[in-house]
Length: 210
Image (cartoon, rainbow, N blue to C red; front, top):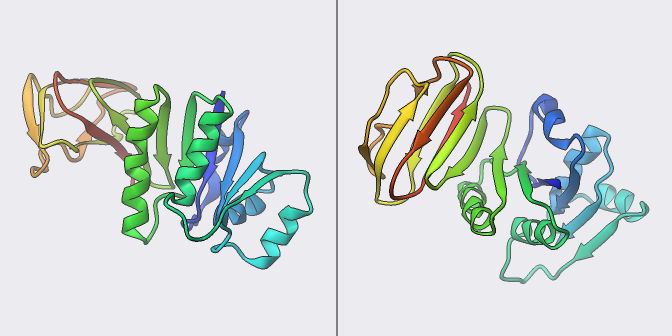
């Protein structure tokens, strides 16, 4: 079962959302409600402390037949963490975070690292916006796209050892990549499929477009 978790970061073009929300459980975290309203869809669940949503939007959804879980503003978890937890509780195995990449770098990084939590739970996860698809790779990742797509491999452990690629313009063969080096940035897919594999470490795979 798939879930899309909407957070509050700005979205300028909603065109990328359709393929993710189709047949997915929709969970709104606080201000993420404004995105589902603009998309004209009804969320299945709403969670958060509701300190970043307008009164108008909140009142609209309070009148709908939606499970709504409000928590105190003073709490240990972010609203996104509550949304991910709820997705896990209802049994999803694939989570897409939309509205999680924004101007607040602290929130953005926290949302990126939620991919580690999702992976530890044995679930698929990604963080997406108009320009990026971010996934976590812990040993082997297969990519599907188009020739010319930009792909970056960003270590999030001090070293990622034994990195081997296929289907990329700049190949690697049993290389070691380091967190403080940009060596893995802006590779290019040579066809519709590519892959990364490695022996040790953890990395983000970011498919980006300008």
